[in-house]
Image (tube, rainbow, N blue to C red; front, side, top):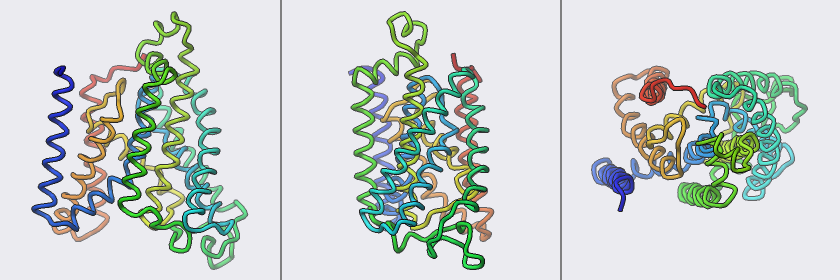
Length: 327
């Protein structure tokens, strides 16, 4: 067994130990809260893996994929789908939308190599602002979604009680996350996946081998976008609501914090990093939230502390990389 494998196994044992501690010390309610958080957020963290592997770095522009998932969700509700069929239809639409936007976004990133994370952040912010206008102008008519006064424009928060809210449940969302992890892992070990990783790590070597790095960068960004769309649907189903307008603005930062906590870098990430990262990050949130709420009675302050933890993790991880630009 290599030193790297021993280190990964040691990390896994630490995570398992902490999970057991939660179950023993804080009771099963806290344990199930932890599992629920992992299931809701896991795919969003997993979405960072293809982006890093293809050489585009951490996908701060995953907001585009999230918006595609939200659009698929509200269209599903508008057309009257509910339950399992509503969730499947929303997934199908979101995959189509996120594939198209992912291809376009990937081509944009190919033109600004070395600044993908910076441009991705602003691209994500711009997409969220643009869709904030679209949520008002798009011709949705469902009384479950539009504003009561005026009958136009989607509400900020849309209940999923009558559609696909809670359709997966805690264990369903965990199983869905595990399935997506297995699929991503298998893809990364196919001929196409290996070519994509080679193009991301050593683009010049890949080019000499007949591999086109730009093509595989687009593929990686598109896969990241698709996972982001699926992730937000799982998150919304578990949460019970779809949140529009400015709500998706900061979601990429939590996903980035999760993958970095799992040991990933801006140049290398794996499914293992995503699983460990989401477990550690959600463990931190699960344990810190009750403590913060007991100290700070203002909910807005507790949210600010949680975001401070997220940004602090990102800042630490990026500083640890020495601020090196992607090549």
